[in-house]
Image (cartoon, rainbow, N blue to C red):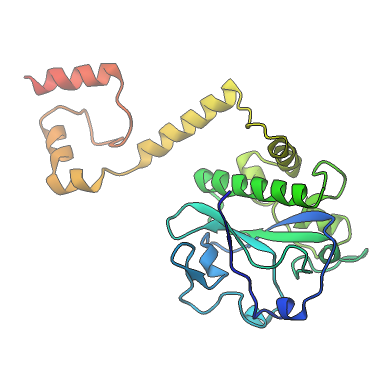
Length: 262
């Protein structure tokens, strides 16, 4: 896990300074198409910098009383990471309340920055960071992620009567075949120090997805600048201009060598 710390000391939640004894972890997602953590924190050279002044290190961001313990999303280099924004034992403002009270009194809450909800690579990256963050917190506070009500998402909190009516993260994760039960199991597995087990069928699915993603990529800049990709096609070396960044099979390589020698 790539964990950095940038506490939101000017947020009203931090200033209020109430504390809790953590009994669980609540997972949220932001509900906005912006995967950059710097959207929500002032940032720095590694995290990226907020240039719009709309971060949460102000009294009431957007006029709302909101604050979470961490954000998971993209850093300046485009890779996923975690930024802690409140002390873990400080009472956050992340779940609202339900008929039976508020998870804010019991649960650490973090947000995963949403993108367009269609990128499997981004999802896998932030999902893994979320697993490792939750595993760390469960170890730190002696929590069992498989126990009832310990690791939940906002929507599950609503169903339990301890959060407002939000759908996160169940509007997003099932698109990529993940449930909260999967998440809890993955957290428990991470706490045991076990590597994720990938079946052969899953591996084939990942490879199919990877090949499709590579096939959809445009030709690299150097090939476009030199014109070599188009010249190879005009010379009959390649059958068409599709799949410029896909791996070539032995048959394709042999055919291209023979065509080039004509």
